[in-house]
Length: 100
Image 1: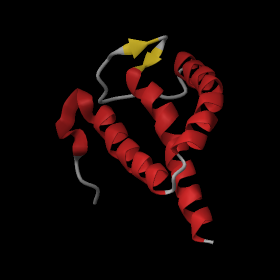
Image 2 (image 1 turned 60 degrees about the horizontal axis):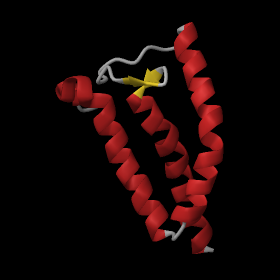
Image 3 (image 1 turned 180 degrees about the horizontal axis):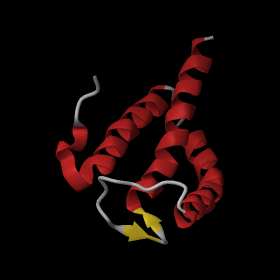
């Protein structure tokens, strides 16, 4: 059974992004890949933003347990998500690549 993190109420999504973002940042720092990851994320961000904006607009998914703060048409948590997911993937990739 998964823990009920809904105790954070409207900050639940934000809390999860901060937790996973912290792990992603740690991985990138350890792999000495912050700069290259930042470049990659900067290139991916506009595409991910448009994709996110569109899927929210047409109703593909709804986000519960969020702050309700929107910026440029999408929830602030989604902006963070757009950075955290590729950072996490790149962090794992770089850690594994540096092990070889």
